[in-house]
Length: 426
Ligand SMILES: [Zn+2]
Picture (cartoon, helix red, strand yellow):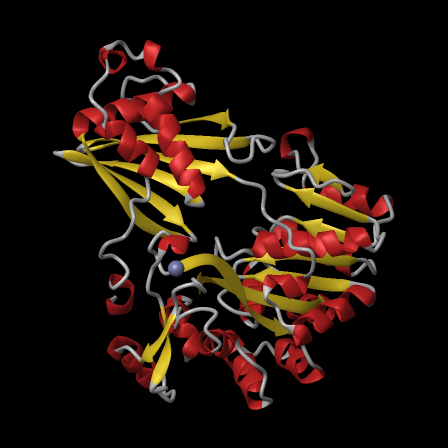
């Protein structure tokens, strides 16, 4: 952690508004009942601070002596402030009241939500989901900003690279087959899909989505929600959709045999299918699809293009530093048999990045378009290791190498690339 630890000392306060409020003398209003405190001043100050710091989540973690406020920024938890237990309880209550939850600590988990207007962007109302659960030291609250996934103007803006963008355009121009975006949860798969949808919408294609549930409305796209209770499951939904004559069909996620079969039904009807799938890398989708009950023949006949991805934090351009490679980073590189560069880019921390050394995230991608040789592997029921070897032998750039290239260019740090998963390097 040495490189990241350097950014901790002297970091500017992440919650200046809340800090200032708590440091002012206790006003009479703070002593009055909970009702008069709604919507709470402290909660409002915390929301403003967290929103300014681009946090996706706020955590209120109770300890016996105090309450820790933590923020998730660019995918990482950052310690923001410790307050005394009384202040912590007041803050938690304010959020619970705003979210329509009973302020009395529940023995079970409870969930609610509320809408909030950020002062900086009053035209964009934000919804927040509040989850509360009782822990030994008190009640823990997790508050999530439910933001629309951001769609980029094109795949190049995602950080996919010229060659990747060309591969995607080629898939879009072809008819039929599946495009799968693969990766673990929280790796930006939805953003990639929405960016592709955006591109298709601009190209005047007829796109229909079948989602469970529809999370965000996209103008210009027909979105259908799976309603298993009313008989509209993936199988029925797909049949109905195909009668609507789409060029492209988007299925939210392939996560059970029903959705996987629906994907095959669409792709084998000559339409192009897009979806996401859990898998550690591109060739890993073959194993995932087999687990979902697809046959090797179905996979081989329909798999068009796989985009595997991870997210890494971007080094802050204002303060990043080119310096002798950290010992821990050197050990990492050495352990996976790679050459250790004498110098590499690392985080420092300044006022532009709240002292974190990083600001924003970018994707690291691996694109795989199965060749006839790969298809032969799939039909022979070879495992993903055999497929991976075949990719390496013909010189394809795998995700880890792509990440290292971004570290070398100073876009991210070596530490962030290692965090993508050591297993990818082997
Ligand atoms: Zn900075």
